[in-house]
Length: 389
Image (cartoon, rainbow, N blue to C red; front, top):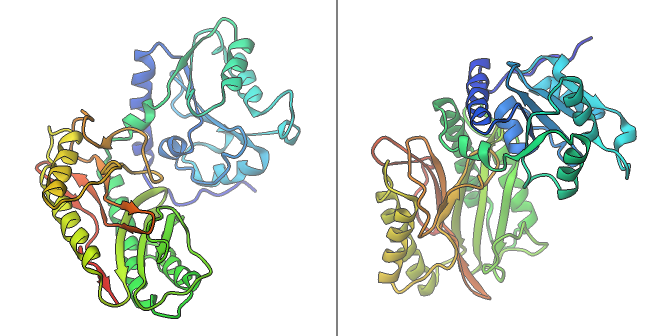
């Protein structure tokens, strides 16, 4: 019995439009065949979200074929058949003896395929930043007449402007993030273990709202006193106490699409220092959002934030944010001074204003937004407050 297809996150026409954009870039670079290995880009071009990128895998796109062909470990092939929009015959599971083999691996199967298809003597594109230098050399050695072209980050940039269907998923993901943050306010109490609170928050994230559960977990960080200066701690075995500060960062996820959210909590009255920083950060956040419009550049948003922060006597060392979409971070545009990336409608960003100031103190707030035809649409519906418990 053949593997059944899962309900697709997008219609077939959406995936074909994305592939067409990639093929136009391939033609511009004289590439006949392209191997995509970035898990996020594979998701974008096929709908696949299973976690099989721990071994060689690749989505091969040919200019003369409508659908790509996917190569993965044999045990992961059924998941690809289930999730991908492509015909099941285009999912190739390679043999287990290629796993942990010092001489050959799954990429050799892809090279054999390119030889069989007559695609090994023209332009062959690789995401050279994703695969190892050893793998790049293998392609060059086994295809000596091919012109191996670096396609790194090209698909990431194509992904930068979202379709309306992608934006709809990010709104759903944001609603789930809001549900998680709302649950946090209900369960964070003195004497409660951080782990128990995390379990409740994560459960709310996964359940989601409006019949749209989160389909994955991404970037869950709970940094509580005395660890409020940390940025990327999950949770500890400690309990919350009166006077604790809790910095939360997590996102809702829908079919790979992530909307991130950060908020600060205080058990009891926030300190004067925390209140002062919160006021400055919120003012900077609002200034940054006011600077968002098509035709502006990423650096304009950062400048608006940093200028406002300086008026409040504050400085943030790290960038103000970054492009977001599939997974957490798209490695393209940054909201930092000097980034000349032009803002376009349906670009999406995480305006990430976490500020880790001293070894024992930090503060977080953020918004995920999209660029509209005139300004910014913030996805979260939650107030920009210190959540006092």
